[in-house]
Amino acid sequence: MTPEQIALVQKSFAAVVPIADQAAALFYGRLFEEDPALRPLFAHSDMAAQGRKLMQALGFVVGSLNKPEALMPAARDLAIRHVGYGVRPAHYGSVGAALLWTLGQGLGTAFTPAVREAWATAYGGLAGAMIEAAYSAKAA
Image 1 (cartoon, rainbow, N blue to C red):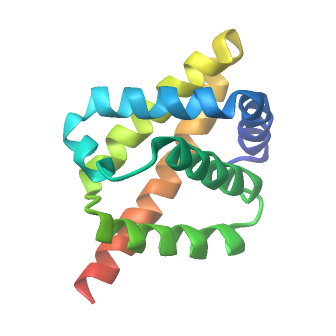
Image 2: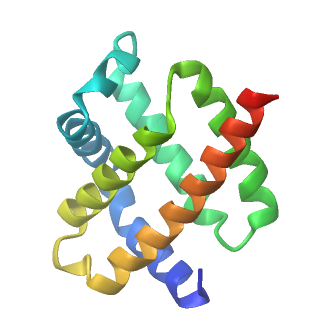
């Protein structure tokens, strides 16, 4: 990611923080609409608490984009844990689509093509690293 893309992601996420609960609810609603097969993975989850975890994780990721030495080990650990929850590589696409849709809803006209591209780049890189970590851990 370029420094400009990092700044776009961080600035736009700051605008989402005040509506974090609503954004999380929108995200999970869209995720289950995009991929209904994911709903059972959350059958025993308190979705309000899950939403808070999502927003906390996003906050960590966004705040760590300038610090890959902190971000990547945490992302790898998260990916390995998610294998145990039943997450498969194909699910990352659904999550990415739901995330971008949610950001578009929450940011409105501030979700410019440049902001969308910055988020897509950030998510794509993170998802790729997580998938690699999950499969390396699963194969080990």
